Length: 306
Ligand code: CP
Ligand code: NVA
Image (cartoon, rainbow, N blue to C red):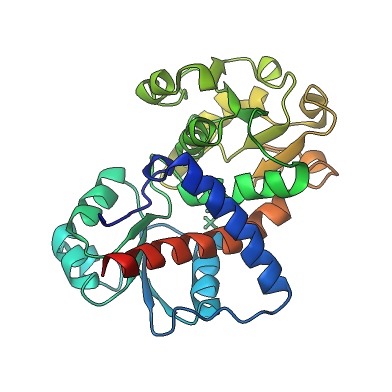
C-alpha cells in the first residue's frame, strides 16, 4: 500500500472523506464523554510552523495528547530549516524520527517536495494554495448542524485565496455547489476553477452569490504574508463584507462560517459573526476532532504499510 499524505482534499477518495467526517463526530462524542482513546502511545507528530497559528497548533497538539502520543513544535527560527538546510534533507531526517509530520508554510511546492522525501505521512496545515484541514472542520460542523452537505449550496464571499481553493476542492469531493464572489484581481486559480467545472459558479457580485445558499463562508482580506497589501485590499474588498443585509439574501436557515482569526468590521460585521446564524465556535472546536480523525486515519494506514 503506498504511503498516504494529506496535502489537499483531493488526496483522499470521496468515500474516505465521508468516513472521516463520521469518525470526527464519533471522536468528538468520545472526547466529551471523557472516554480514553490513547491508541498511539509513543507516537510523535512533528509540526513545522513557518506561519503563525492558534487553532491548528492547539488542535494538533491536543489531539496527539488525547491519542497518547506527543507533538513537537518546530519553527524555522529554531531549526536548521531557517538556516537553509534543504527541505529534502529535513524530510529524510524528521521522518526517520517522527511517525507523522505536519507543515504550515508559504509555498505549496515546499510541502510537495517534503512529502516526496518523507517516509511517514505528511499533512498540509496551510499553504498559500490551500487549507484542507480547515475544510474537514467546516464540513463536520455543517453536517452536525444541518445534516449532509451533499447537494447543498455554499457561498464563498471574499478573497480567491487558500481557503477559497479548499472550498473548491470540498465542493468536488463532498458534492455541493459553490458560488464564489471575489473582487476583480482576487479571483481563485483559473485552472482550478476550470477543473471544478459545474461544481462552482463565479461572480464579482456578492449579492448574486448569496442566492439560495445554505452556508456562507468568508476569510480575512489579507492573508498571512500579505500584510503590506492590507490598505490596498480594503478598497477592493469593502463591498464584500458579510453583513446582516447580505445574510438575509441566503436561505433563512443558512449558517455562517469563518475559519478565524476574524476582523469584525472588515470581512464580516459583528452582527453576523456574533449572531444566531454563526457557528464559528463549533467550527473552531471541530478542528480538534477532525484533525484527530485525520491523525488516526493516517497513522493507521502507515501501520498497515509497515
Ligand atoms: N483557521 C486556522 O487555521 O486558524 P489558525 O491560523 O489559528 O491555526
Ligand atoms: N487565508 C488565511 C487563513 C488563515 C487560517 C491565511 O492564509 O492567512
